[in-house]
Amino acid sequence: MMPLRLTALMAGALAMGLAALTAAAETRTITDATGRQIEVPADPRRVFAAGPPAATLLYTLKPDAMVGWPRAPGAEDMPFLRPGTRDLPALGRLTGKGDTVNLEVLLTARPDLIVDYGTVNATYRDLARRVQAQTGTPYALIDGSLPTIPATLRTLGELLAETQRGETLAAYAEATFAGIDAILAAIPEDRRPTVYLARGPEGIETAARGSINAEIIDRVGGRNVVAAGPDGLATVSPEQVQAWAPEVIVTIDADFAAHVGTMPEWQGIPAVRDGRVYLAPAAPFGFIDSPPSVNRLIGLKWLAQKLYPEAAAPDIEAEVARFYTLFYGVTPDRAALAGLLGSGHPGE
Image (cartoon, rainbow, N blue to C red; front, side, top):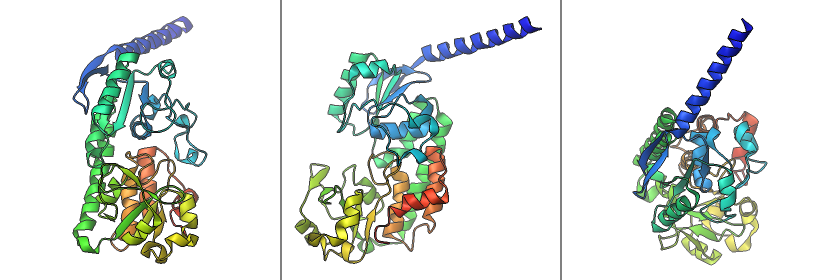
């Protein structure tokens, strides 16, 4: 019997190996957000994310296919990440600020697909073409705007051979948008608060209306005091913020949140005076941007509760736990939730 069992096991292993080789060898042609037609594996097994937004998106859809992170997760991120992804190597990034990946490192990682997620323009289209030509690895660019998240989840889910998961996450995104619309339908625009997004320890870097970094504020109905301009990010002065007099300040910088109450140049601003400066949670991915990816879906709910506490869902802890379970594959316990959301309540 033993030889027969070994033979069966060997045959099974051989069949599995052949199936894997066949799946890896099968390809199909897709059209990415730039209109480029790309031949991609039917079931990508090793995917390189071009930057943090793409890494977050890839993590939520197919974490087992990640070959690394653009930058290593911090210790504070680890409890909120799947165990199998925590120790993946930091490979660098192809897009955005920060460490740029060496193409030799990229090739050593042996990806069968490169995914980028963000702004779609001629610059990023040319980068995709150039990297694909240099590495021989298909490079797909996906629209990273907030309204397209449901479609993006379905598109990338199909691209990664994770169609059902893409559909599940897309349905959550659509329900989130519908919930925000329901809240806004009952609040006239002139009753929605003015908002300033403070970045950096001095709080003077900000994002203008319509920019990808402040898109979430626009979507939740906050009236961003910084007018739309040619650049997404801008540096302003505290005097300018004084003139704008925002009713709410949202920040992604813990130092600024901790010290704004004692910074003389910020005194008298309604948001500071009224205790409406909110530090957005940031682990494992930011609620506002950092990066601007699907993590903003839970940011919408969190921000809606800050701007409209009487209209939004009262139990934000339950909402966060549900989102982290569904998207990140980790269910935070009460202590973890308190630590995560407690950092979003400076001075409370």
